[in-house]
Length: 256
Image (cartoon, rainbow, N blue to C red; front, side, top):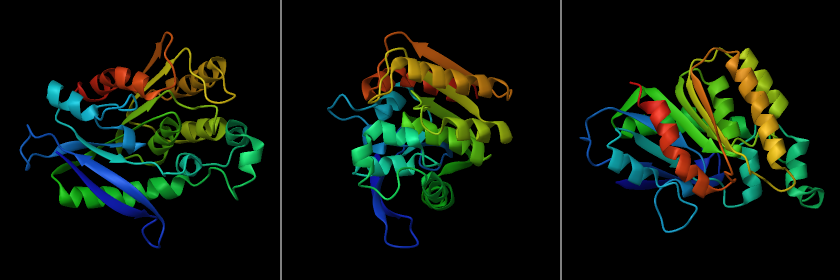
Protein backbone atom coordinates (compact mmCIF):
# COMPACT_ATOMS: atom_id res chain seq x y z
CA UNK A 1 0.00 0.00 0.00
CA UNK A 2 1.20 3.50 -0.82
CA UNK A 3 0.35 6.43 1.46
CA UNK A 4 1.14 10.04 0.59
CA UNK A 5 1.93 13.03 2.83
CA UNK A 6 2.85 16.66 2.22
CA UNK A 7 5.65 18.39 4.12
CA UNK A 8 7.26 21.81 4.15
CA UNK A 9 10.99 21.88 3.59
CA UNK A 10 12.46 23.22 5.77
CA UNK A 11 9.72 22.63 8.31
CA UNK A 12 10.66 25.44 10.68
CA UNK A 13 9.22 28.05 8.31
CA UNK A 14 6.95 28.17 5.31
CA UNK A 15 8.98 26.52 2.60
CA UNK A 16 8.54 24.48 -0.54
CA UNK A 17 6.09 21.61 -0.35
CA UNK A 18 7.43 18.09 -0.73
CA UNK A 19 5.22 15.13 -1.53
CA UNK A 20 6.38 12.05 0.35
CA UNK A 21 5.05 8.63 -0.67
CA UNK A 22 5.43 5.64 1.64
CA UNK A 23 5.23 2.04 0.45
CA UNK A 24 5.03 -0.87 2.86
CA UNK A 25 4.46 -4.30 1.25
CA UNK A 26 1.18 -6.00 2.08
CA UNK A 27 2.78 -9.44 2.47
CA UNK A 28 4.55 -8.28 5.66
CA UNK A 29 2.62 -7.89 8.90
CA UNK A 30 2.25 -4.30 10.08
CA UNK A 31 4.12 -5.04 13.31
CA UNK A 32 7.24 -6.47 11.63
CA UNK A 33 10.20 -4.10 11.70
CA UNK A 34 11.40 -3.38 8.17
CA UNK A 35 14.49 -1.68 6.76
CA UNK A 36 13.68 1.61 5.06
CA UNK A 37 15.04 2.87 1.75
CA UNK A 38 14.72 6.64 1.21
CA UNK A 39 14.61 7.51 -2.48
CA UNK A 40 15.10 10.87 -4.19
CA UNK A 41 13.03 12.00 -7.21
CA UNK A 42 10.17 10.16 -5.55
CA UNK A 43 7.66 11.05 -8.27
CA UNK A 44 9.35 8.44 -10.48
CA UNK A 45 9.77 5.62 -7.95
CA UNK A 46 6.47 3.73 -7.99
CA UNK A 47 4.69 2.00 -10.84
CA UNK A 48 2.65 4.19 -13.19
CA UNK A 49 1.94 4.21 -16.89
CA UNK A 50 4.96 6.14 -18.16
CA UNK A 51 8.50 5.28 -19.14
CA UNK A 52 9.66 7.44 -16.22
CA UNK A 53 8.72 4.85 -13.60
CA UNK A 54 11.08 2.58 -11.67
CA UNK A 55 8.24 0.36 -10.46
CA UNK A 56 10.02 -0.52 -7.22
CA UNK A 57 6.72 -1.42 -5.55
CA UNK A 58 6.02 -4.05 -8.22
CA UNK A 59 9.52 -5.48 -7.86
CA UNK A 60 9.25 -5.70 -4.06
CA UNK A 61 5.89 -7.45 -4.30
CA UNK A 62 6.96 -9.99 -6.93
CA UNK A 63 10.35 -10.73 -5.34
CA UNK A 64 8.90 -10.78 -1.79
CA UNK A 65 11.65 -8.45 -0.61
CA UNK A 66 10.87 -7.25 2.94
CA UNK A 67 11.63 -3.58 2.39
CA UNK A 68 9.81 -0.32 3.02
CA UNK A 69 10.33 2.62 0.64
CA UNK A 70 9.96 6.33 1.39
CA UNK A 71 10.02 8.37 -1.82
CA UNK A 72 10.55 12.14 -1.63
CA UNK A 73 9.43 14.00 -4.74
CA UNK A 74 11.82 16.56 -6.15
CA UNK A 75 10.69 20.20 -6.50
CA UNK A 76 8.29 21.01 -9.35
CA UNK A 77 10.84 23.47 -10.77
CA UNK A 78 13.66 21.38 -12.20
CA UNK A 79 16.19 24.09 -11.35
CA UNK A 80 15.31 23.87 -7.64
CA UNK A 81 16.23 20.20 -7.85
CA UNK A 82 19.88 21.23 -8.29
CA UNK A 83 19.65 23.12 -4.99
CA UNK A 84 18.42 20.04 -3.13
CA UNK A 85 20.79 17.53 -4.66
CA UNK A 86 24.14 19.35 -4.47
CA UNK A 87 26.07 20.37 -1.37
CA UNK A 88 28.11 23.04 -3.16
CA UNK A 89 27.46 25.72 -5.74
CA UNK A 90 29.26 24.60 -8.85
CA UNK A 91 30.12 26.19 -12.19
CA UNK A 92 29.39 22.82 -13.79
CA UNK A 93 25.72 23.36 -12.93
CA UNK A 94 25.87 26.66 -14.81
CA UNK A 95 27.28 24.78 -17.80
CA UNK A 96 24.49 22.23 -17.50
CA UNK A 97 21.62 24.73 -17.72
CA UNK A 98 23.37 27.49 -19.66
CA UNK A 99 24.57 30.93 -18.49
CA UNK A 100 21.45 32.83 -19.53
CA UNK A 101 19.14 30.64 -17.47
CA UNK A 102 21.62 30.66 -14.60
CA UNK A 103 21.39 34.47 -14.46
CA UNK A 104 17.72 34.18 -13.46
CA UNK A 105 18.63 32.53 -10.15
CA UNK A 106 20.32 34.02 -7.06
CA UNK A 107 22.04 30.66 -6.44
CA UNK A 108 22.37 27.36 -8.24
CA UNK A 109 23.06 24.36 -6.06
CA UNK A 110 24.61 24.29 -2.63
CA UNK A 111 21.52 23.67 -0.47
CA UNK A 112 21.84 19.91 -0.23
CA UNK A 113 22.68 19.93 3.47
CA UNK A 114 19.38 21.65 4.24
CA UNK A 115 17.56 18.89 2.37
CA UNK A 116 19.48 15.97 3.84
CA UNK A 117 19.29 17.30 7.41
CA UNK A 118 15.53 17.56 6.99
CA UNK A 119 15.39 14.01 5.66
CA UNK A 120 17.53 12.46 8.42
CA UNK A 121 16.55 14.63 11.40
CA UNK A 122 12.88 15.33 10.73
CA UNK A 123 11.39 13.01 8.13
CA UNK A 124 13.10 9.81 9.31
CA UNK A 125 12.00 10.21 12.98
CA UNK A 126 8.45 10.92 11.76
CA UNK A 127 8.48 7.74 9.66
CA UNK A 128 9.96 5.67 12.50
CA UNK A 129 7.25 6.90 14.88
CA UNK A 130 4.41 6.15 12.45
CA UNK A 131 5.51 2.76 11.04
CA UNK A 132 7.22 -0.39 12.26
CA UNK A 133 10.76 0.20 11.04
CA UNK A 134 14.22 -1.08 11.80
CA UNK A 135 15.55 2.32 12.86
CA UNK A 136 19.15 1.18 12.39
CA UNK A 137 18.73 -0.14 8.85
CA UNK A 138 18.59 2.99 6.72
CA UNK A 139 19.26 3.19 3.00
CA UNK A 140 19.26 6.01 0.44
CA UNK A 141 19.11 5.78 -3.33
CA UNK A 142 18.99 8.15 -6.27
CA UNK A 143 19.99 8.59 -9.87
CA UNK A 144 21.92 11.34 -11.64
CA UNK A 145 22.01 14.30 -9.23
CA UNK A 146 20.09 12.06 -6.82
CA UNK A 147 23.16 9.82 -6.92
CA UNK A 148 25.38 12.77 -6.04
CA UNK A 149 23.35 13.63 -2.94
CA UNK A 150 23.17 9.94 -1.95
CA UNK A 151 26.97 9.71 -1.95
CA UNK A 152 27.19 12.88 0.11
CA UNK A 153 24.76 11.37 2.60
CA UNK A 154 26.93 8.26 2.85
CA UNK A 155 29.88 10.48 3.76
CA UNK A 156 27.91 12.73 6.12
CA UNK A 157 25.61 10.40 8.10
CA UNK A 158 27.44 7.29 9.40
CA UNK A 159 24.13 5.67 10.40
CA UNK A 160 23.25 5.05 6.74
CA UNK A 161 23.93 1.39 5.97
CA UNK A 162 23.04 1.03 2.27
CA UNK A 163 23.50 3.44 -0.62
CA UNK A 164 22.48 3.24 -4.27
CA UNK A 165 23.90 5.77 -6.72
CA UNK A 166 22.77 5.10 -10.30
CA UNK A 167 24.20 7.05 -13.23
CA UNK A 168 25.85 9.50 -10.87
CA UNK A 169 26.08 13.02 -12.33
CA UNK A 170 29.65 13.15 -11.09
CA UNK A 171 30.49 16.10 -13.35
CA UNK A 172 28.80 18.11 -10.59
CA UNK A 173 30.51 18.65 -7.22
CA UNK A 174 33.22 16.14 -8.16
CA UNK A 175 36.17 17.60 -6.24
CA UNK A 176 34.29 18.38 -3.01
CA UNK A 177 32.59 14.98 -3.17
CA UNK A 178 35.94 13.22 -3.48
CA UNK A 179 37.22 15.28 -0.54
CA UNK A 180 34.22 14.34 1.61
CA UNK A 181 34.59 10.65 0.76
CA UNK A 182 38.30 10.68 1.63
CA UNK A 183 37.70 12.37 4.98
CA UNK A 184 34.70 10.27 6.08
CA UNK A 185 34.80 7.04 8.04
CA UNK A 186 32.70 5.08 5.56
CA UNK A 187 30.91 1.87 6.51
CA UNK A 188 27.88 1.57 4.22
CA UNK A 189 27.40 -1.01 1.48
CA UNK A 190 27.36 0.83 -1.85
CA UNK A 191 25.99 0.07 -5.31
CA UNK A 192 26.93 2.31 -8.26
CA UNK A 193 26.32 1.93 -11.97
CA UNK A 194 26.56 3.78 -15.26
CA UNK A 195 25.71 3.38 -18.92
CA UNK A 196 28.22 3.97 -21.69
CA UNK A 197 25.89 6.31 -23.65
CA UNK A 198 24.87 8.78 -20.94
CA UNK A 199 24.55 12.49 -21.69
CA UNK A 200 23.18 15.56 -19.89
CA UNK A 201 23.11 18.81 -21.83
CA UNK A 202 26.72 19.56 -22.80
CA UNK A 203 28.11 16.62 -20.81
CA UNK A 204 29.11 13.63 -22.92
CA UNK A 205 29.41 9.89 -22.27
CA UNK A 206 33.14 10.45 -21.88
CA UNK A 207 32.46 13.02 -19.13
CA UNK A 208 30.25 10.54 -17.29
CA UNK A 209 32.72 7.68 -17.62
CA UNK A 210 35.72 9.75 -16.55
CA UNK A 211 34.11 11.42 -13.52
CA UNK A 212 32.53 8.18 -12.29
CA UNK A 213 35.88 6.43 -12.65
CA UNK A 214 37.43 9.11 -10.41
CA UNK A 215 34.75 8.47 -7.78
CA UNK A 216 35.21 4.70 -7.98
CA UNK A 217 38.97 5.10 -7.63
CA UNK A 218 38.44 7.08 -4.43
CA UNK A 219 35.82 4.70 -3.02
CA UNK A 220 37.95 1.63 -3.74
CA UNK A 221 40.63 3.00 -1.41
CA UNK A 222 38.20 3.24 1.51
CA UNK A 223 37.79 -0.52 1.86
CA UNK A 224 33.99 -0.51 2.01
CA UNK A 225 31.86 -3.15 0.31
CA UNK A 226 30.79 -1.76 -3.05
CA UNK A 227 29.88 -2.77 -6.58
CA UNK A 228 30.23 -0.70 -9.74
CA UNK A 229 28.53 -1.89 -12.92
CA UNK A 230 28.81 -0.38 -16.41
CA UNK A 231 26.01 -1.18 -18.85
CA UNK A 232 26.94 -1.13 -22.55
CA UNK A 233 24.77 1.39 -24.45
CA UNK A 234 22.94 2.38 -21.29
CA UNK A 235 21.41 5.87 -21.46
CA UNK A 236 20.58 8.55 -18.90
CA UNK A 237 16.90 7.79 -18.40
CA UNK A 238 14.43 6.34 -15.90
CA UNK A 239 13.88 3.32 -18.15
CA UNK A 240 17.55 2.36 -17.74
CA UNK A 241 17.39 2.78 -13.98
CA UNK A 242 14.27 0.66 -13.79
CA UNK A 243 16.08 -2.08 -15.72
CA UNK A 244 19.07 -1.99 -13.36
CA UNK A 245 17.09 -1.56 -10.14
CA UNK A 246 16.94 -5.34 -9.42
CA UNK A 247 20.76 -5.44 -9.54
CA UNK A 248 20.98 -2.62 -7.04
CA UNK A 249 18.47 -4.11 -4.60
CA UNK A 250 19.99 -7.58 -4.88
CA UNK A 251 23.42 -6.28 -3.95
CA UNK A 252 22.21 -4.00 -1.17
CA UNK A 253 19.66 -6.30 0.50
CA UNK A 254 20.20 -9.94 -0.44
CA UNK A 255 23.23 -10.47 1.77
CA UNK A 256 21.52 -10.42 5.18
